Length: 167
Image (cartoon, rainbow, N blue to C red):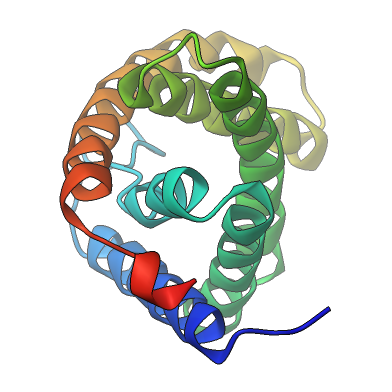
């Protein structure tokens, strides 16, 4: 298998962008209203890569972002929450995209909801209580809103940013 340096460079740029978006998101104080709510800005890069480069590449960018953000700005729990959310989210987004029955926004919304679901599952394990599942509907609403926003921005970028030169 031949590795294309241009593709590696593009994946590096997308990974860096996802990390920067994660960091910027941490500066936006949304948790004052409902703890745990985030915009999911890094998913703009993930959805873009999924549609423009492919599933394997999206997994790579997601994994790089999760690990480096946890190392630089978080801890082991950050890694656990992010990884659980990303596994559910990205798996569903890859499968839904393959069906070609969902728009970018639809794929992103499901990704947002399942990301929150994965985080609730980890919280249930960490806190040793199933009662935290009652918080899931609130997070699902935020996941829908964030998923719509991320999906719309991603759709615009997918249309307007050419990556053919990098393949």
